[in-house]
Length: 241
Image (cartoon, rainbow, N blue to C red; front, side):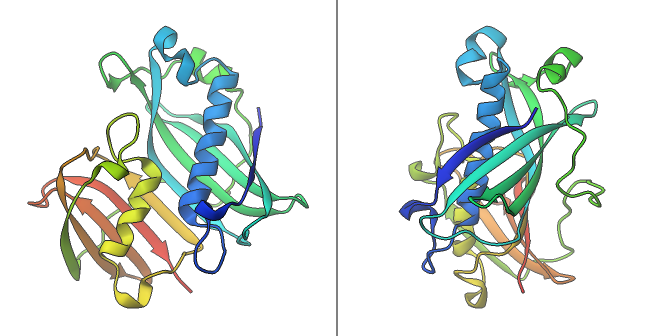
């Protein structure tokens, strides 16, 4: 099952060049995923009955042609199957002419909303989503995003209320808002065309985290960790031209 949702690129979705932000693309993809879940009976309004909610584990996005202010775009998503623990979901962002301007892939884990513990991923759940045999990244072998061997910059950052979502933790898309707090000056303000995020442990309101930046093999990394660096909250990797 392919599910699409239409958007118009607005003021809050663009950078200083009037181009679509990566955070907005992630938001469009997430909204389309929510529409898919609602369509098959596992949406937000269904949680009191199903007790099922989804936590995003990883997402990767590649921008092919960046939309600009005023463009009409459609985010299309579909289920790509599962393994024992994770469900996989892919995306395409299309412009008004039907061209694919961005692609994405993601992995999700089912959570029991009553206990906030991992729920067993059953055939009944996945069959409702009607898996499609299509991959946005045909050559991607998957696998967990790994930290670089070393970091060159670090800073502390206190998590404020503006980053919270309805689950009372930092929203998936808002981790990108932490990048300006740590990136070197030459990378400030850039919107990389390829970006990957891995989420491990939630960050909640009032926590002070450590942000670390490093570069390895042409890729740039930002880690969000506990102050003593013993716990990884999230890891972001991106490439710039």
